[in-house]
Image 1 (cartoon, one colour):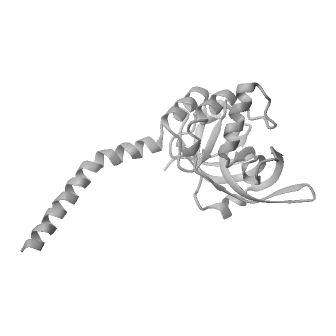
Image 2: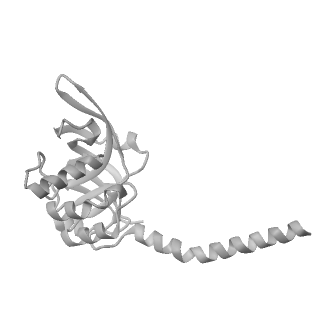
Image 3: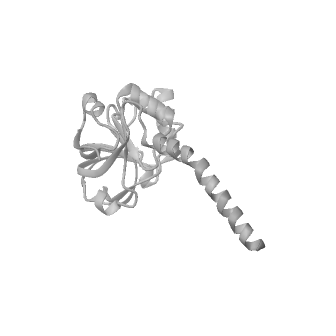
Amino acid sequence: MGETHTLTFPVEEADIRKLALGDMVYLDGEIVMTAGLPTHQRIMQCLETGEALPTDLGHAGFFHLGSYNTEADGAFDVLYLNPTTSTRFNPYMPTLIRAFGLRAVGGKGGLDRACAEAMKEVGCVYLSFLGGGCTLLSEAIREVVSVSWNDMISHYRIVKLRVEQLGPLTVAIDAHGNSLYDTLQDEAEKAMPAILDGLRVARAAAAGGDRS
């Protein structure tokens, strides 16, 4: 089991580089979240056209979090948040990580090797959120700082939150290119031949028993 850290955003690159695979992290300060694929596409369009984003992502924590929200009298309230799958954003994240110098990204399910290489370049980690942990995670919400792109449905908007002790989160891809997802994939591939051999032996034994 790794070490436990508290990161306060905005965070320095040196603090990110110190984190190791398997470390547990809690977050304080301001983070940015969205659950939207169209949101990522719109951010990419802004980069292509030079249009400024309504929320500064420079050196930020940018997380794939869905949420349930209410709006009344102009007030936007986040009642709970929960991680969404990051892998569907693989085509966009290397560009976003490099363009904004993101310090931390996260959600559930991980990101691919191209994303890990971008993280290694700029000093960024992937933090794995507890799937189904919305009650625990939502207790960390202290304030909705800003909400942008209100023409989108609520959980696709870019929302900046102030949080306190958001976590526990796991460093699943560190800032040196190491990935727990790659490690688990390698281990699974190495184990697969023995598993298949065992199944073939069991199937043959079962077939022989049927003939007798």
